[in-house]
Image 1: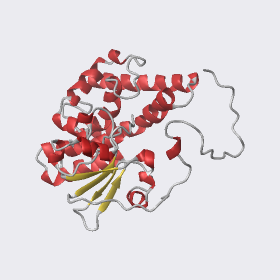
Image 2: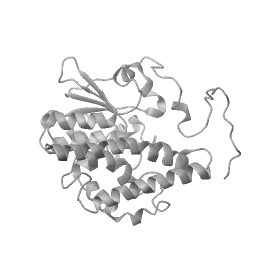
Image 3: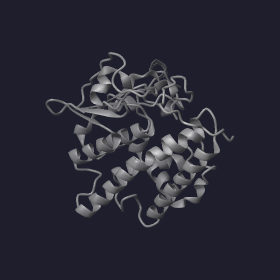
Image 4: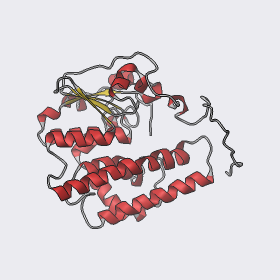
Length: 296
């Protein structure tokens, strides 16, 4: 479809009925829309999130930390329903004034410390536990370069390509072509990087992999946007090799389940308050959490 030339008005006005899958939660102002306290569990770390790619970054790291023996990484993961506006509740906004998941409270510190933005949370946890980030200057710098690469590149994939290709109410050639070209360039960047090393930042698995995999690993394995064929994902052999290897990690498999309320029942754990929750899921709990409220 080719759209008629759009001429922007001199002063932009918000049209609340602007269409699109997520139109109901998009608005031009910040701050809370309603009073809503957040629950607080028993563990040192309190996570408020949803199993979108950004949310998965943090739960994957937490599960990896626990698997590596860091007992103080125990956490409660509370479900934030972004399609219902939980991120605009007063409690959530007090932790993240930007009203985006994920957000975290570290209650092992007095007063509790808030951390928001997924990359910031990954870096905070990696430094707190001294894990999944190289300790030498060169290795650490390379890891952080790729972590921040994802934070800068990801919106072009999600809000750019993903929105116009999968979610926009109408399909327009220009934005789809523009963002497809950029995403394929990004995949080529990753493929060339992974041709010479096992993981993104070198031979050690790190928070750089945990940041990039939920977006780009899912993309080439056709788990987001159903665009693998469109993007010729099979041509990025090194990215596919890396993506499949990470997917096989038990901690990654657990992490991607947390705060998930869509997909197959065995893939869902709407809230996580104890390691035993992975084994004690019931259909009643899934139904109560609203299983099937998909966010792809």
